Length: 430
Ligand SMILES: [Zn+2]
Ligand SMILES: [Zn+2]
Image 1 (cartoon, rainbow, N blue to C red):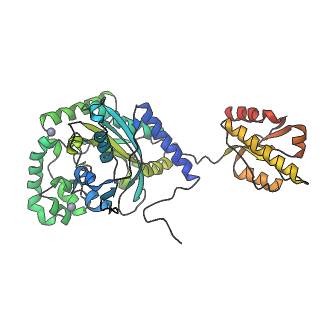
Image 2: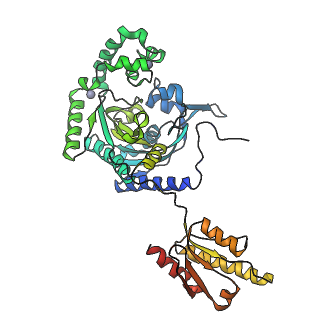
Image 3: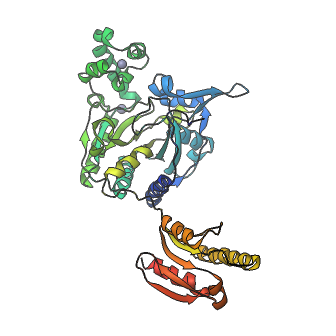
C-alpha cells in the first residue's frame, strides 16, 4: 500500500471543515485590514531563496526541497512566503504603483525538517506583507492583524515578544563585537557555526545546538549597537505599542533564522501550547529585500503564521473550531411498491426539490440508491439533518409533504411548493 510521504498530512472530513473555517477567519481579518490576496507558484528558482533567505541559513543549507527540472533549471519548493511575494512585487512593477502595497498569501510551504507535533514537511501558512512603508505604524498594524486573528480564534492571552536587529549600517559594528565574543570560544561552537562565523556570524544567534545556545547567551546584543535611525524606529515602535495599549516584552536574543530581516523582529506566543512550540506567528521588517533582488529601495514588514499550529492552538482555546457536520434537510424518498414509472418520477421530483432547496442556500441531501425508508431515516440521522421531508406516492398525489424537525420534534404538513420556505425560515431562525 502506498502511503503519504513522511511529514505530510491528509486533511479528511470532518477535519477539513475546520480548515475552511480557519482559512475564512484569516481571510476575513486580512480583508478588514485592507490586504489583498496574492497567489504565487509553489516553486521558484532556487537562487531566489539563497539570495534573500540567505546562503548560510538553516533553511537554505539544510531544509529546502531543491531539484533540477528536465532542462536543468535549479528549482526549489518554496520554504517560506516572503521571498516569492517580493519577487512578484518587483517583477510586476508594483514598486512604481501606489504604495504602501498590502498583500497576503495562503498556501503550502515545504521544508525538509524532522517532523514533530505541529510541524510538517509540507505545511500551510498564512502571511501578510506591507511594501513601501518605513513607518513603525506599519509594524504595529501587522502585529495587531496577527493578534486579531488569534482573538478571533479564541486564543486569549497571546504574548508579543520584540527585538530590533538593526540595519546593514549598524550591523558591521555589531558583527565585529559578536565575532570578538565568539572567537575565543571557537572550538566550542558546532561545526555549522564554525563554518558560518566568518561569512555570517549572526546565524550563531539562532543555532539550535544546545552548546551554541549557551555560548551566545552572554553575547553582545544587537539592541546595544543600533544606529541613530534604527534606534529612533525602535523607540517609536515601542511608544506606539504603549500608546495603543499593547503589552510586549523585549527579548534581546530574538532573531529569526532568515537573513533578509532588518530592524524589527517579533513573535506572537500563546503559552498554553507549551514552551517548546508556543510561537504562533513570527515576522519582522525587511527594508533591504527588494533592493537585494535588484529593485529600488522599498521598505517592508510582514509575518508568517503556521496554520497547523493555529488549529492545534484553537483546540486548546476558548472557541474550539467546530467540525460542522450537519445538513439542513434530508429528503426521504423510499422506493415505490410497484412500477418503474412512479420510481422514476419520484426520483426526478426528489432531485428537483433538492435543487430548489439548495438554490435557497440550504444544505440538502437524499439517497440516490433509494434504499428502504428505515435505511434512509438512519442516513438522515447520520448526516445530522435538522429537517426531514418524506416524499412518497401519497405525497406526490396530494402534492403536500410532512416537514419534520429532527431537533424539536415538531411536524407539519405543507404544500410541496412551500418546503424550502418553511425549512429556510426555520434554519434562519436557528
Ligand atoms: Zn541601523
Ligand atoms: Zn551552532
